[in-house]
Each structure stands twice: as structure tokens, then as C-alpha cells.
Length: 210
Image 1 (cartoon, one colour):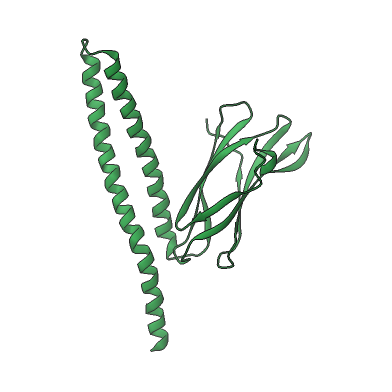
Image 2: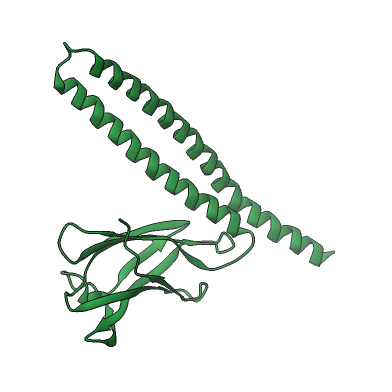
């Protein structure tokens, strides 16, 4: 009887942690629907303004800016919703830390690249995940394999990034790759300060989005 009670207790604890996130997912869906409605309204308003010759260009510009902001907010909320869904789906099945949604894009300066990813923890791990995020870039220089730490890829000479979150944390920044270096793979290491969570290491091929 005691074993059965303990099993029910652990299950209830997991459910208690999953339920708030499910409510957050539902609220996120509702906000996305509202953004979709707003985008439709703005598109209709813009079409009317463009057909009306007596309307000045400033009015059209303002509506276009509002539409662009709405689209940007929609994409961001969709991305957050995907992250939350992933946490809910994985939370009752596995434990530990995860690196999701890694992407690379070209920066504003030659040789610069913007990275972005999300770190999260499964719901079985209660409390905040605190620690450090280390990045390193593998590649070749003069035909020889070389690994560059984050401090050699940033103007600020940053050695590591802070990690502190309960459900997930977005991570982004800019890397400045040396001209004589041919990047091949970026490695992300999560090093929690607590023994409750194990360290993890994830590598991603160097694929820059067009």
C-alpha cells in the first residue's frame, strides 16, 4: 500500500507541474488567434488605403509598420508555443536539459554570424536550472583541425554565458569568425552548478540560413 501511495504521489507531483504549462500553452494559442485576426484587419486596411489615391503616403507607411510588428509578434509567439509544447511532451517521459531550435544567420559585418537556440529542462526536474553555457567552434585553419573557444569569437572576449531558468531560456548572440578559419561545427555545453542536473553537450553542423 505504501508503494502504491508513493507512486500516486509522484504522479500527482508531475501532473501539478504539467498543468500550469498546459494552461500557458492554451493562453498562447488564444493570443496567436488574436494576432491572426489583427493581421487580417491590418491587411484589409492597407489594401483600402492603397486603393484610395487621396490618402497620403504617411498613413500607408504607418499601417505597414503596424502590420510588420504584428507579423513579428506572431512569429515569436509561435516559436515560444513550440518550445512549451516540447517541454510538456517531454516532461513526463524524460529528465535533464535540452538544446532546441538551433539556427545560424549572417550578421551585419563581414565574417559575423548570429546564433540562436533555446535551452530547457524536463518537468521532472523541479526548481530553476542554474549554471553556465559554453560555446566552441570546430573547424580548420590552414588545413589543420582547430577548436576556437567563445572568447576568441567575440569582441568582448566572453568566456561563457549565464544560464538561469525554470522552464526555458532563449540564447542568442553574434560570433566573429576569423578570416583564415573554416567553421564546420558549433558545440554547446550546458554546465549546471547543481548536481541535480547532469551536464550535456550538443553539436550542430555549421549551416547558415540564406
